[in-house]
Length: 138
Image (cartoon, rainbow, N blue to C red; front, top):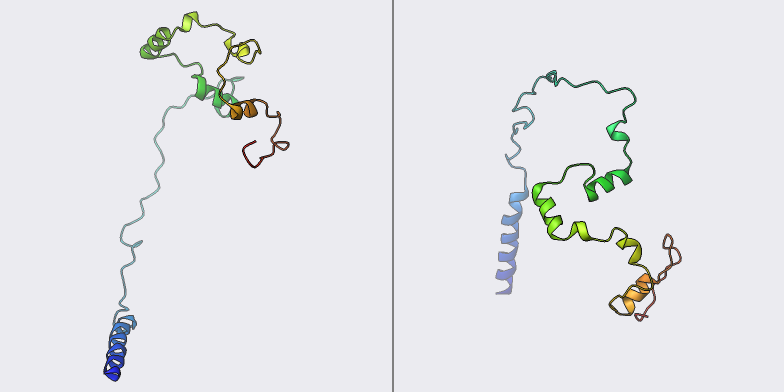
């Protein structure tokens, strides 16, 4: 019985490994790059580009900081009617212009958010070299 099982396992392995051989399966396949012809180079149409004005700033000369500010705050683009109405409904005209400078004032009433918020606010300023993580959540 044991000899028959060993012979059957060897036979199954031999049949399975015959698929790994190279018997007649190395036919020449079509080249996928030769199927389509290369498109000829074409001169692009004239888009009637206007030459730059002397002394005008180049569009690509704006720094990343200015690009970020334009992306965040809209730049010089006019606001849409829905955005204007949403700002008016939120009280844009009655908001205090200096509210950001008063937010860090010690006289400003704030809600206590816990020790983690106090630790974040009291963290030293700088590039983070002096900041250290402490174990135990202290």
